[in-house]
Length: 103
Image (cartoon, rainbow, N blue to C red; front, top):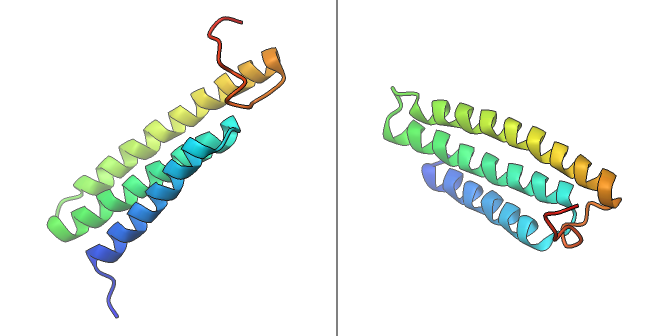
């Protein structure tokens, strides 16, 4: 059995769906950030798999994946800083409790 593009895209869609479900259904801010990372990784799998099939001599998908990883790392750093600031003020990281912009 060979692994084809369909297998990679099904894996990517499954991971993205799990991340989307987790991001929309969970209340913990750290869990929501982890689900967003899962969604980013699903997109990376799709980028690399599509590039491997469409244009194997080019590294376009891998370059896009590196950019997504870089942006995801920055997003995690900023997101965790925001979560820590909110926790220091309100003593909770429940996303439903943080509904006001003013402190």
